[in-house]
Amino acid sequence: MNLELSPSVKYWSQFLHPILMWALLLLTIYAAYLGLQVQRTRNAQGEEKKELIKRRYNIRHYQIGSIILALMVTGSVGGMAVTYINNGKLFVGPHLLVGLGMTSLVALSASLSPFMQKGADWARATHILLNFTLLGLFIWQAITGVQIVQKILSNV
Image 1 (cartoon, one colour):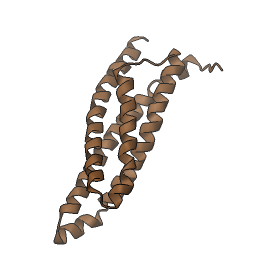
Image 2 (cartoon, helix red, strand yellow):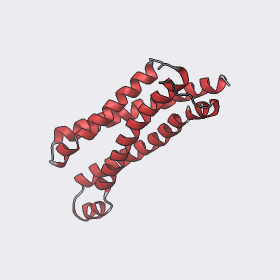
Image 3 (cartoon, one colour):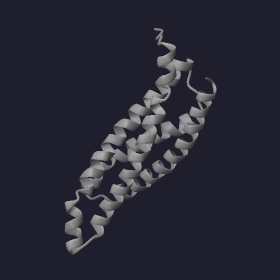
Image 4 (cartoon, one colour):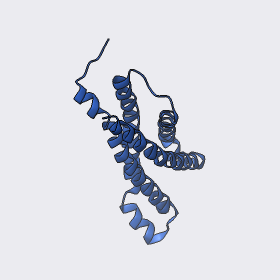
């Protein structure tokens, strides 16, 4: 099957992945903030704890994490699809491989939720480690992604 798109659609479709991923990076930073507030709530005592619980950081963190999981998977697959449609191949290099690794990390991190809800400290520690690793890789991906966008723009 040969999918033919107009040159304009093919060109502009290349920018959907980077725009989505930059928005997702910001959302990931917000999720990290919420996660830190969940930890703060867990460690608080007395009136401070009551006030922090009212802010529902745990629920917001869980909801944002679910959105991140969905967008990371669809954004990764979408980026590969657009690259393949436009070039007839994927460019196997650090950006692709780290992106696939990040998609795996976010899935692994999300899979720990049932264990954390049951109070498993090992799951919580692993979740935090995976997510801060993910955030570091995400920042690196943003930089390499900008370099790829610059290459696309220079080929106009």
